[in-house]
Length: 266
Image 1 (cartoon, rainbow, N blue to C red):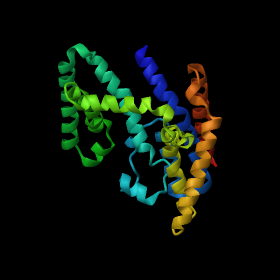
Image 2 (cartoon, rainbow, N blue to C red):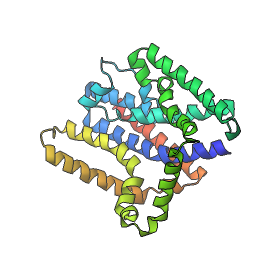
Image 3 (cartoon, rainbow, N blue to C red):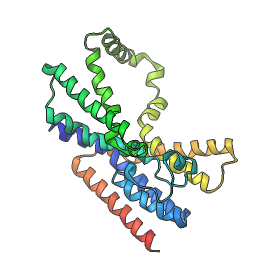
């Protein structure tokens, strides 16, 4: 039940909004792009909606940073989200095989160290482009955060990392800064901002607004804030039940696939 709860909360937060953004980007891609950019965008949409964008091979000799420079693919930024999703799927399973617990802290630490060493070795010996895209080659980066707790068990840093958040919680009711609604909106909507910012950049680039440096930033902020507010108050998916989440996500997947099919056959 713990694993089910973990996966449900992660996917309830990530899936509805990400698939909705994919749907909107597919519509934008079909409306604004032509030729190779259109076909590559539809291909990227399929990889992104199933969270394997980091495994997509490019038809041209272009790496991730070149794709960012060209900004002609609405789904380039899904790369890091896909790596995160794959980590959520893989890491708990690896840990479950060992069944770690606090009574065997040193053994657990050794187990994670071995996995980290294997992943790090794989990243060193494999092709650089392959390691950049592979979750297996990046697993060691995630596991460092899970390993560091053992080093802090007996150290003074443990006291400070526990005391400081507790202090913030204690002064929360009296702190105008921490309780300000504007800052809370920014914190709650950071994931939405991440999903939205890149498609906005692509649209601005398609319309050749590159020279309008100041206006571009202003336009980006206005559009992003509008979407953040709209999504925050209209889509209350973080409070949905399991059944409602399944219905919502399934509907978004079906709608996205239909738009892709219609767009590629027009």
